[in-house]
Length: 105
Image 1: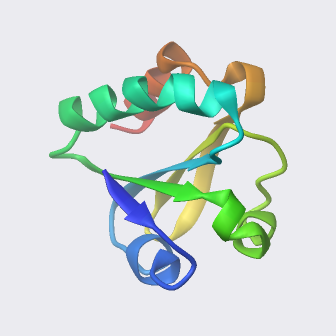
Image 2 (image 1 turned 120 degrees about the horizontal axis):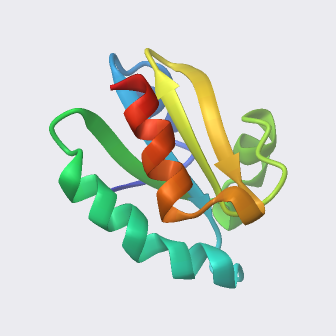
């Protein structure tokens, strides 16, 4: 998984062609840290179809707000730079993330 920061987010996500999944998380978010191994597992399974990234929102608050990330964890799926769907907070679990991925592949 590619670790993003505010300096490369635009290039790696908003200017990217195809599908990009972004895991918005923070160090102080226990559900985020619990979900991370599942997202990393999915990244291995779907690596040939989707670019997987993660962004620590603690270091990029304005960027997270600009992307309308209002709660954590948020797993957002982008296509050609546009956010097309996301799962957030209590809905952010491995099953729901995988269902979101499968919907578009």
